Amino acid sequence: MKKKIAISLSLIFLVASIALFFKLKNGVSIRISEAEIQSIVYPKFPIDKTHFLVLKIEYKDPLVELINNTEQVRMGITLSPYLEIKGKRYSGTAIVNGRFRYEPVTGKIFLTGFSVESLQLDDIFSIKLDKLSMSISEMLEDVYSQYPIYTLKDDIKQGSAKMLIQKVNIKDKIVTIHLGF
Image (tube, rainbow, N blue to C red; front, side, top):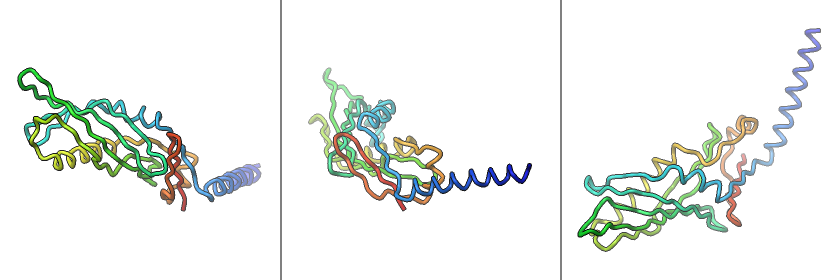
């Protein structure tokens, strides 16, 4: 009786392993919509950050855009400095580009590699925008390195431990990330 149970369990394990092998043989494709990414990004805001020891800025209202035929995600962010001069509150916008990173050990996909494409602040600011751009990129990297935009299902995670991102394709507000060996 014990021998039959052991053989049955071995066969089940063998069939499951073969099925997983064939499932992963050609890689795994993950599809994530722009709306799904937006729903993950938005709750992380507003973010308050102090720059240059004196300039505190609130970052809010992120708007995610997947750029067709690229491997990039674009994010627009409203900047609201905590600064009021002669009754006027100043503001601005940042357009930031990022890309996707897959962490094989955890089976998670993150946004990473942020770079500021454009930064506009009201004309009152005479600060160095390139240093502020770098600070914004670092801040976003810190935030989104902690929060994945997608996590592989457990049945795929084990077999994908050695996979890497092979290809990223964005079309019609959907990113398809192909993981393979």
